[in-house]
Figure 1 (cartoon, rainbow, N blue to C red):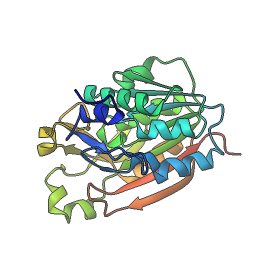
Figure 2 (tube, rainbow, N blue to C red; figure 1 turned 45 degrees about the vertical axis):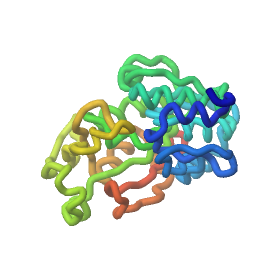
Figure 3 (tube, helix red, strand yellow; figure 1 turned 180 degrees about the vertical axis):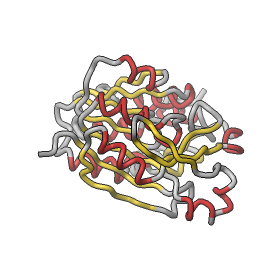
Length: 254
């Protein structure tokens, strides 16, 4: 019954937010600790793309819409952002309304189903924080490579020495296994979300487990799909949730 405000909109999901609101906005979320409205891997990828003016972007798993806002701010002509988590989708709509994301279209559903049937090609695909939630990450990369010639990817990866040395992480992972697909050899493990599934703000995959790939498996498969890896950044083997890095890849390199 208070005065209408953007804060009222955010408070619909009080206690469920992962994303902190931009500094200076006067808005707050709880717990809202991740500063995703100014994420280094997105800014670096945009810089390597020489900006997004007039470009179309496919964003896989926008979570709460902060990166979508960055993509519009960078000048993207159109952003199609596909989110499967229903509560995250609703939070994206809140962010769209508050920050006037009129060039962003949020769709609710499985982006893999979209990738398997899509006809549109995009100037850029953004997959930040989604690959390690997939049950078939190689298929995800293969379909993304068909949808866009440029890719911004941020993901966790499996490093046996790092994971097994951390008791907070080790119990979530199976032993590494060797896989083969169309002649491509890779290393993978099963990751279990375990207690994370009990949080109302859970923003992981649709299944109770996912598949993580090793760093080399990811990079080598991107190259197999025709990408030139332009840069790898933010390689953080000691990230609290598991080793992670950012990849910028393109098929348009000379």
